[in-house]
Image 1 (cartoon, one colour):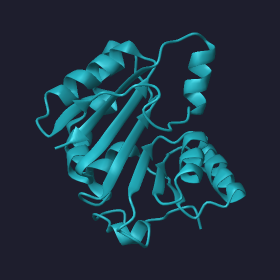
Image 2 (cartoon, helix red, strand yellow):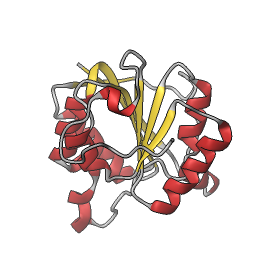
Image 3 (cartoon, helix red, strand yellow):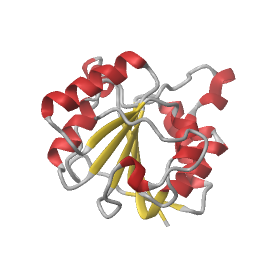
Length: 195
């Protein structure tokens, strides 16, 4: 089944509790929305496993339908909040790539602490769950969110920023990214490697 329900929400999971083969690369998408990106990545890369995190039930259901219709055994969805999952639940040094694509920007200044990239729990968790050499990839239409991410990750010695040209590798658009591009917004992108 494509809906992943952890055996225990209050301890760190083992890789083989999510997908049976820890030798296969595991990629995680935080806030997988309607599953567009997750489904396309899982179809393009059958040799990798993909876990989408999403807390909104309607989006989880839509993603599950896409996975089922495409017949993708290498894709699952976990209905849970991203900060907690990254900070405490996901297995240590297990993730090859973690994707954060068009997250809620919390645009009001008083809400800046709610931005995932400003939260120590998330940043510590990101450093913990990525394998050495693993990557964190971010796309956002919000310039302030992007600047916060650059500052937060720039202050972490565990990460080094990598170049990321638009044609570097297969990377489908999310539903939100397509929407923002259609409105004429710029999409900012950054990519970091776990040292």
